[in-house]
Image 1 (spheres, rainbow, N blue to C red):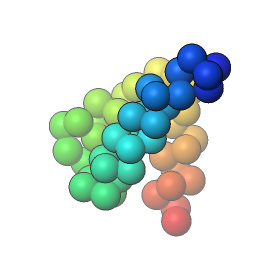
Image 2 (image 1 turned 180 degrees about the horizontal axis):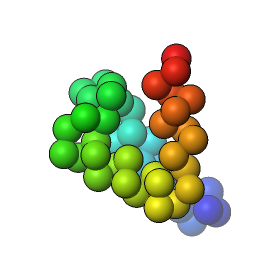
Image 3 (image 1 turned 45 degrees about the vertical axis):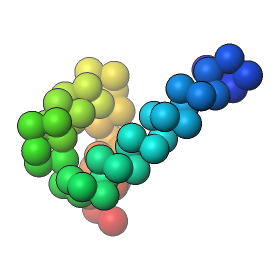
Image 4 (image 1 turned 60 degrees about the horizontal axis):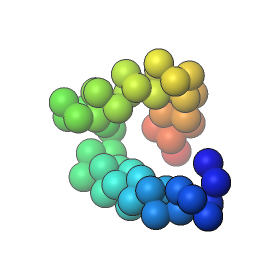
Length: 54
């Protein structure tokens, strides 16, 4: 991502991620489950394991 071009989108994404984790720490809601699936598809599922481990 190019910050000069996509900075506003990255800020929105960061705020949304913080909101999601504050409301659904275990990603157990339907939206959380969808996010887990997306993270798996984009090979970012290791981040979930690290996050849940504390």
